Length: 197
Image (cartoon, rainbow, N blue to C red; front, side):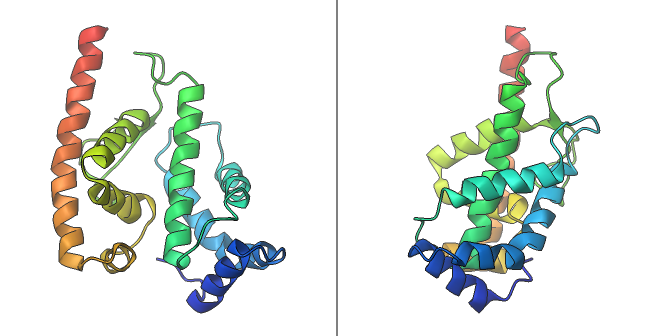
């Protein structure tokens, strides 16, 4: 997943969180390619007419990261996990601001295949997925984190396991259970939305 030199990125993250002014500026070139890859990954699932571009998503993520300078960064995996969550949040905020929740109102769709998340069924509503992940986090925060790290953060099973201090088998089990739970939750939410229409 992450090709940045781990010790250098980790050292800069620690220096940045301790208030060293130039640390963020030295960090950006080391992480830019990976953040762009994450943004491209997110944007590849958006509709063709989506007005938010990959570069704008990366830039917005940088702006939000600057506000997080007081975070006690653990390592590069922690940084990229937070970055992935920020990008997901940016897209959700964008979707909500564009009134994509209105029934039949041009809901922003994101295609999530097995390589990205949980289903072979195309065109999940990004906001419904986010709501389902938020509901999962309330029930089991770790399972929600596993989904976020693996499929939104692009981490491998091993990186996810290391970040969460669990075994790769635990990550695989959490992912299987999360997949079933999220599919059911999304279907229930879609049914409720249809009944209300």
